[in-house]
Image (cartoon, rainbow, N blue to C red):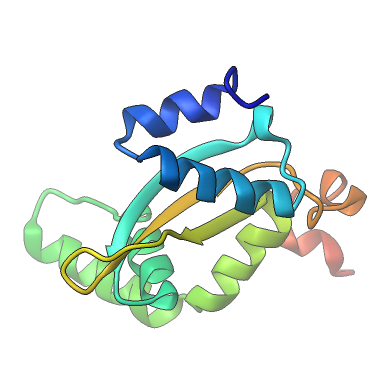
Length: 138
């Protein structure tokens, strides 16, 4: 049934085992993700899910400047100004992001897979709003 899905081929190419792929598919099916429209965006190793989300998002938002010192200052500013939990919550609600903890350990860390796509949590209201500011009357 799932053999022809593009997401499976992507996960295989990214080094996931068939057991890990089955875990990912089971998670996605539980929340009624549209598997043909779901996209893999990355993975990381971390001691817990909160840290995995934080480092994954921070790395994805990494702003590289010409000077190494400038880059570290930008990252410090991001760390102090962004509510990472709220940022993640909005990604889940508005864009269908998910963080899946995979079984097994590697040097006392767990592997987490990050994907996004249409699912049951998005609901019909996700289609209408393009910005978090749409909910406010100015």
